[in-house]
Length: 304
Ligand code: RIB
Ligand code: CA
Image (cartoon, rainbow, N blue to C red; front, side):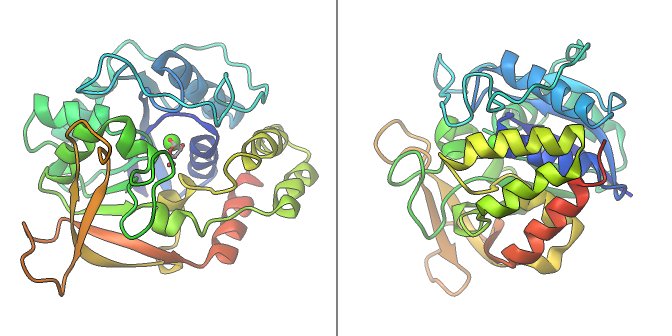
C-alpha cells in the first residue's frame, strides 16, 4: 500500500482526485488537508468531508488549513467550481474537520513516520506545504515523493497569460516548495490540458446508479462548461499507473514577486546551459488520456 497525504482545495477536479483515491485499495490515505484556493478554506474543508463521506470513507480524517496565501491578506478564489465549490452536487456530511491544523498534521505525520515512507499529493495552492516547511525546515524532504498539480512549464497560464491558478493563488508558497530540496513530480497545464473530458464520458457516470457516480456526473456537467480538464486527477492516476505519463527532469523557478508574472514558472531543460540551480522537478508533458480517463471511471465505479 502507498501511505498518502492529499492536500487540496475542493473544487470539482479535486473531488474527482479524492474519489479515485478513495476507490483505490492501493492507497492508505492517512489524511486529507484542505487549503484556501478554488473557494475559501471553510468551504474547501467541508467539501473534503462531503466527498469522502459520499465514498463511505468517514475513516479518513480531514484537516482544515491556511485561509490565505503567504504574502497576501486575502485568498485568491475563483468561480469555476460554483459558489459551493462542487457545482451544486448534493453530498451531505455529518462531520467537521478534525481540530488540528492541516500544517500541524503534515509536519507531525512526516516527522513521526520513517523518512521516505509517505507520498504527498498537492492539488491546490501550496500554502499548507510551504508553512510546514517554514515551521520545520526539511520536513518535505522526509516524504517518499511529492506530486504537485501546478504551473505551466512550456505553455500559457489559465488564470493569467503566464500563470496557472494554483501557483498564482500563492506564488511565494510555490517558490518555497519548489526550492525545498525534494524533487517535485510536477503536473502542470502542459500535461493536464491533455486530460480532456468528453460529454459522453461524463454522461457515462449516470449509468453507475451510485451516489458517487451521480455526484460525479453533476459536478462534471457543471465544471466541463468552464474547464473540461481533469487537472487534479493526473497525479493520483500517475501513482496508480506511472506508465500513463511521460516527462523530463528540469530546473523550475517560480516568480513570486508581486506583478504581472507572479506565479509564472520558468523552466530549464536538462540540456540547457546556465541553469540557476540543479534539476528540482520532473515536468510531465504527456499522458495517454484515453487510458487515464478509463482508469478514473473504473475506480469511481467501485464506489457506493
Ligand atoms: O489550474 C488548475 C488547478 O486550479 C486545479 O487544481 C483546480 O482545482 C484549481 O485549484
Ligand atoms: Ca485543486
